[in-house]
Image 1 (cartoon, rainbow, N blue to C red):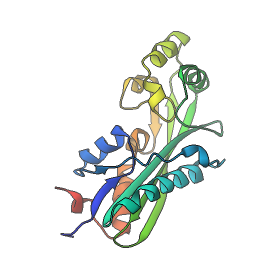
Image 2: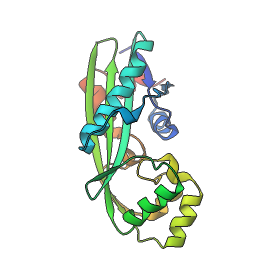
Image 3: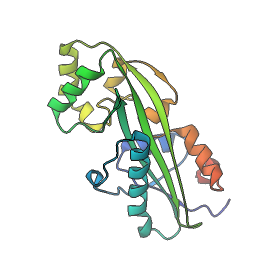
Image 4: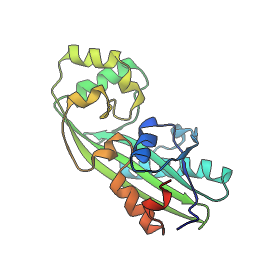
Amino acid sequence: MGNSPTFVLASASTARRRLLQYVGIQPFVCPSNFDESQIQLENPAELVETLALRKAETVAPHFQSALVMGCDSVLAINGEIHGKPANQEEARQRWLIMRGNYGELFTGHVFVDNTQKRNLVKHEVTKVYFATLSEAEIDAYVATEEPLKCAGAFALEGKGSVFVEKIEGCYSNVVGLSLPLLRIMLTEIGYSVTDFWN
């Protein structure tokens, strides 16, 4: 498709931007600044899909012919939903629950296609198993402030990777967006990932 729309990423996440760049997509980045506290849902899949949709819908009106992608991630541990920790103490408490445990990382993926006037909403879930950390390791990791920037209080592409023993499912989903799902969704709305290579 020679006249592919502009690919807009409605997210400030550098990890998501990098993942898209890895696969040849140079997105136009436009963070939504959507107030996530407006959405209170108990089901993690529903929550990430709704938040991703709201982010994309907030940005979409600013672009006439664009394909706007919204994403949102949360970690569910023992059935409880966790987003980004608010501060170091919250990150520390989270890691006390996470160590020696596993969580399910949910990422909502949404495309708002302004040229076709249609939306596509999906999510991906990946199981993440955490090492049994000592309190000293937790304190040292929290002190780096890396956990404060991530849903689930860890970065798989950063220092936090040494505390992840294994994952079941899509790796890139844990980093920020599922590349296999990206390809599937683009195909479903009539594009190919190669349409966005430049």
